Length: 107
Picture 1 (cartoon, rainbow, N blue to C red):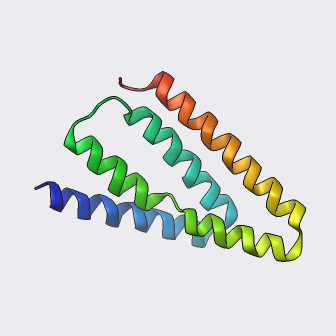
Picture 2: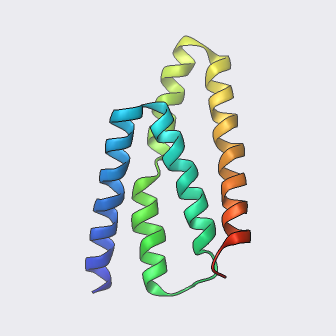
Picture 3: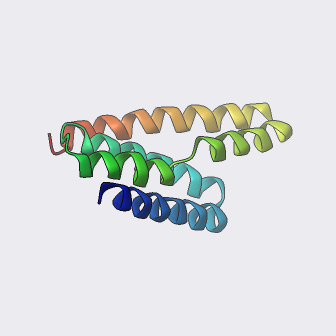
């Protein structure tokens, strides 16, 4: 049953990521990465296998390091400053979202 839930959660997360990236580009990738950081923060401390599946498969498939790397590469080819600002904004807002999730979470 856990394997089935893992596959479903991963497929759902990947589909969300694909649709958001196609529709909103860099803003979509950034939004999903921040939402994923918040979701993982909310899930901290629950510790059951369904939570692990949701966090690893669902949120893991929804967020994307490769998409971030691709966008940083494209931005960097035009302006290194824009790429740096995008990276710093992503890191700061991601850590802040995770912090909020941990403090407002279910633990």
